[in-house]
Amino acid sequence: MEAGSASHEEEQRLEKLHFANVLKAFDDYLPYCLSANDARRRSFFSLPRAHQQLLADVGQPLALPELPNARSSTSQSRGFKSRLEEIDDRMRRNADLLSLIADESRGFLGPDPLADEEEAATEDSQAGHDSNRGANSSNSSSNGNHSLGSSSKTGRKRRKISGHEIDKIQSTLKQFVRDWSREGEPERSSVYGPLMDAVANRYGKIGLENRGHVRVLVPGAGLGRLAFEYAAEGYSCQGNEFSFYMLLASHYILNKSSQIDEHVIYPFVHSSSNWRTADDMLRPIRIPDVLPSSLPQTSEFSMVAGEFCEVYSKPEEARAWHVVATCFFIDTAKNVLRYLETLNHVLPIGGHWMNAGPLLWHFENSGNSRGGSGESLSIELTLDELIQLLPKMGFELEVSTRFAPDRHDLCCSEFADTCRCSRLCMRHC
Picture: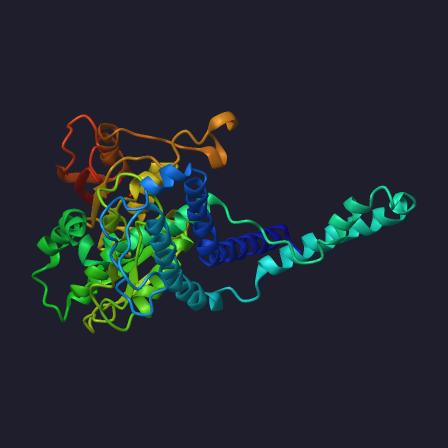
């Protein structure tokens, strides 16, 4: 087998393994989160009895779940311990939707690569145990307990889910709020609104029947709402997303939603910090607030998985898009110059790139002892440096608007600057 082919097969194997681990994170959300909440319960029961009694009736009566067949109490309760019970219930309801998402996505995986990994690990462990059995047989009486412990590991070893992976699941639940709930509309209006308006100002006069000829690309599409909004206006739009967590959730909400407010989630129950009331923490969020299937027939809408530069630096993507809209995306780059090169590649002369978001460079300080190269590479620019870089990379800045209230800090709000750029002819054209 040639080296290139072997390398490609290894990449595919690792990608499938990562996909399987993401599915496992969806499956393991409930036991992990219930365990974390149970730690709070153990803390409560470790208190002196007098302290437990003081916490028994603090706070307002707790709201009941909105859905029927509640697993929690059928009457309102109050107090710290009761709140923990209600949190358990809301986590189970979150898990109901997460299970639907995972089950819908398993068909993309094929044979489970985790099963092979676990079988191999079990066989290696068993082989090691068998090879030592003869050598240790003469000492079986003294080592009986140790041998018994080893021989009990006959089942498949399951990799424990990490807190980082559960954080991704919890972040996905919160992302549903911004992208697909009524509660998220104010933030969508503030962040997505300027990006939508910029395209409407340039192409909005085109009749709806012809607007599908305008091609809009949305890298870092997340759960797909911004891309959906462009498609809803009649444009042909493609979202691109790298995170499997986002891709699985967006696939489900975009393709399997049959009615508005079909699902109820409780995305705020994972942390007890900084809440005014328990009801705020336990409040339900209904999704989706619109039906994703309600698109004009003239528009096209798709989501593509993969790393932005790898997918869109290909020759067939050259000058293929009239507009690129990025939101909370630019600062995900390890090397933002590669992002800018790819943006220049996909836009024709006179094409437009719109951007909104802060510069919270995701890989800052990731270099540690490895020197900041390779996988640890991270180039962080100030806004001023980025703006001065634009003409060198083939862009002309047309409009820049700041939303952050502190003129020195781009991150004292949820988002910062929006800008609109025109693609120029680079010197090497």
